[in-house]
Image (cartoon, rainbow, N blue to C red):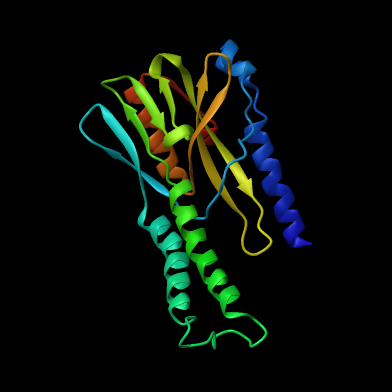
Length: 214
């Protein structure tokens, strides 16, 4: 009962922030923009940290927490794989599990760790010299000129977990002139989210719509 009440109150708080009256910004693009969080991955720790290389370059670097989280799967998979070879005859697994299947299970752990590290930490940089935002690798790479960015948007996302405590993530997006949004990063730490958003706003010269301060 108390959990349901807590969940209800949290959702009310989120709704009050996400369903804001955008007309108070006195901006046509703001009223056209969606204020609900985009559908992105969440985490109960910061997965990246904003770094600077001089006055005109800000970039995101994968945090040690994210590296350790991904590395856990990689190491566990490789360690278990070393015990499931021809000499060991798969003795770490029940006799009903074939040795090849056991090796596949171990490789799945390793591949999952590599996938997490690769796809949750794409290169993200705000280059003040080129006036360009770059995110992603290969065919997923996205380049947006600062002139195409209308504003920055910082909104909360309440995540309900059945396996642990509920928590907030704080989502930083760029908003284009047509009100289309492009996700940059998500934070677990509210203060860090606001500090980084302010730094990016200063570099790009774009207004920051910070729902978190309201």
